[in-house]
Length: 364
Image: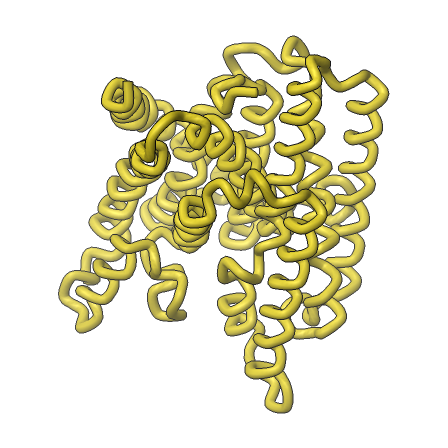
């Protein structure tokens, strides 16, 4: 199965994940009164959209490794790195620069300016609380993504040869041990602020289960394709029902944990694996659903613009919040979404797509 195989439902999932993060920030930063009842309560948990992105990345990267590592010679590692840099770096640099110019023009005069530049260029800004969310707050997740790509590049063929159960067990052990270690050093015996635990537990090892869930979903889909068949309707329905049940359970358990979400030992050991299960089932469903169900210009656009939506929305929200005074949070939300979609479309058309096409020609 080629990594270039197109799955429209994955594009739909990308778009939904990006819009989920937008909705969460509108609730948290602009007091958008989204109801607290199910299923709309989903949009009040911003991490779920990010979790979906991590799972999708796990699946896409494993499929890319399957294709590139099968080539003769050793150039596949260079091709892999070039693909990722061409996809991530241009818009990341542009939105970071726009964020500083519009919202933090004083940053270049601050004493830690070069530290900010250095860590963000190397995608290690998530390591320190002072640089974690200092430039376009959502960028910490890109550091985690790049670190995952680097890990996949180093492990290479091992990820393809390693059994599914071994991947699952290694990820579960790594994630659990990391979060327990964070709890031991930051919470026990002297409780710390939840934001410090958020910073510590959302490093790459603490999110291992979610990336692994996406990889396992991709392995299953590639195995089905290698057998020359498509997932049955029953399989698609079961995956969809399982994913929905997983998210309902994750949403309920997150609500039950409340403030202990980041600091309670039970929450730290149980919520991430539960979310990873929901992520894996969701990604598997998106890979299994018939293409005709989601093919279309809107879905393709959501997939293409999802990265832009993710990076532009916080800039649009904070800029409009600073320079406008709208009474209705719903009107404000419509303006934020409209500006975000416009910037995402322009960014994809004028920057992202041309550079990705150049990268493909370079590899050819």
